[in-house]
Image 1 (cartoon, rainbow, N blue to C red):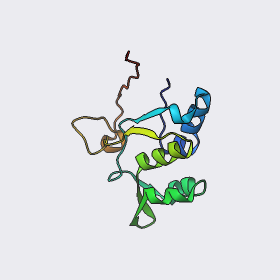
Image 2 (image 1 turned 135 degrees about the horizontal axis):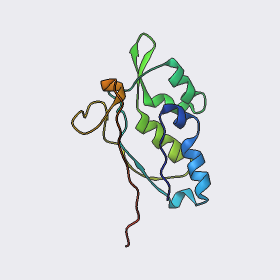
Image 3 (image 1 turned 90 degrees about the vertical axis):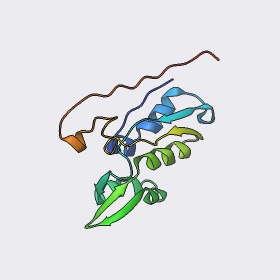
Image 4 (image 1 turned 45 degrees about the horizontal axis):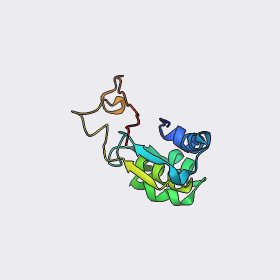
Length: 127
């Protein structure tokens, strides 16, 4: 069992691939859950973020929607899913929340300009 957290820099830098490698398990046997993150309708990025992903994998371009002036809306959930699939993980769940737009559910520094904390837990349940 592992828990990994990454923003776009960590994701582009290999956090998921390194976590999978450290587990020393067949990726086909792994299950991934994508927890709350900034959603694709709120994650505005520049060309540097696009380049960080597309230089490593041209298919990552599908996760970026141009909005003008060299800016893009990025889908970090899709980027994580692409990374996991490339690594051999096919059981991928979650990824439906937006920490920016779901104001009543989540803290967001990007939205509020103020720090806060969120907690995630991971556990095994007996079958």
